[in-house]
Length: 364
Image (cartoon, rainbow, N blue to C red; front, side, top):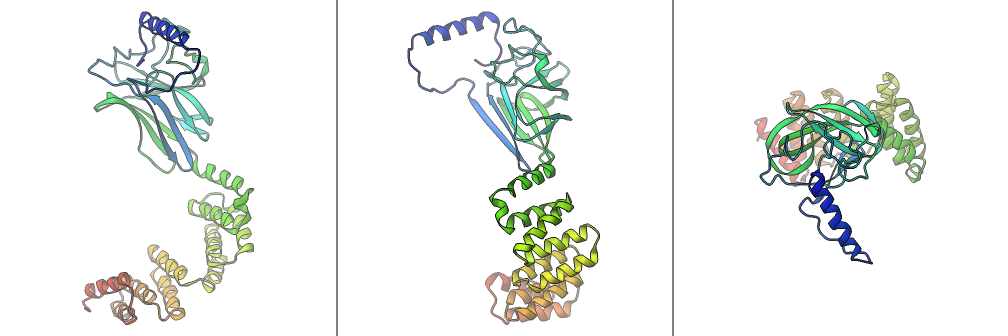
């Protein structure tokens, strides 16, 4: 069954199904559903998911809007016989499931599953409805009192889409736009998650389990808070727990970042000096490039020079220092460091980088 049918056809179909079922005393095999196959689409936003389970009718040359799918709200002559929206697909309810509390078209919606319905009007205005009832067939038993939310939408024109399709577009850190595409119409619904709040609450839960048995869990939670500038007070507690288990560049550098974010630059500098004192070659190199990315060229040169002093036989350390001087515009020191890198029989990728810069600087 594709979409809502007149009562006479529906009654006939139900009668056939009942008669057919009575002929079997045992269960029957699972067979393909035609002509509106079932489908599922899902999108992750942050660590949360949005999942839509639906059926996919085809246009098949039919007039869809205002005909197969009537405009506005309609009594269907069956079920509750209330004014009802379109089922937004075929067969059973189209079901949308949120893994966490979400905001849908500006409305707060608890986590869980809902029946998804749409209304289309002749002027391409419309509505989206989420119903707490999601286990019904079509919208015959639609009850407005069971609505979780209802909001107006603007329906868009799109190229021809033969099979009804749900998709997610306009993805951002905190949101996605769910769209239903069919024939030449698109029904958009904006869905948002409070990603940082969800991640932080999930981190607190995970740290009460095996993730909290090692320093890495606390460090990763604190680093997320640092990178996203959320709940830095809690993050400081977490990073101190990580440092208590493993005082290293990885943990100390996160604490330094949190201290800086809280406005304590002196403490941040001291902690970063402690971090650099125990850093390995790769960690110093990465920190140097981070400083370059922040346009702190002089500080980057200081860190990368320290790396060459600790690891004088590392071609990569000299190559990185050469890059820092080149970015600062110090041609003489850049050339000297790139040549030093080449003298140490560097691996192919480091050699290629040093030679590229020397050519750009007119020294090769």
